[in-house]
Image (cartoon, rainbow, N blue to C red):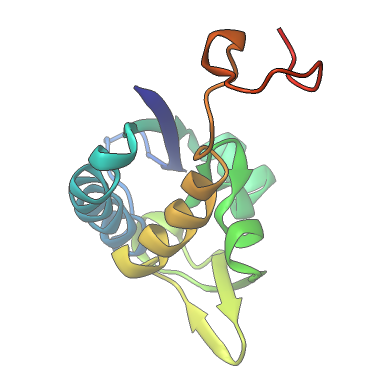
Length: 146
């Protein structure tokens, strides 16, 4: 089975807390992965999730590193044709301008599952195709690689 890695990164403070924005995105990631498992199973593709934490010092140095999602090694905004932006975030983020994404004139502080699914399906489409082994070739010319 081919793997479709989804990586989500967020701030976790010294008390083990994250903000509501990041918490909502994590819920979206989990919901998306459960749906993607069903959608992608017939294509022999398995979505996987990895969560990463950044500490308060790293966050203060670059708040845009929190609430990031990568799918198959690319940022979600690349798959969606979105722009990275920011807006003020409270609680754990202490009023920092935290990462958002914009698609058209709509901004998303919490990345919803439907956007994660959409990006993952675009990424998965690059995994679909003929297997790259010489044993499956049916032609009788030199065109097929071994």
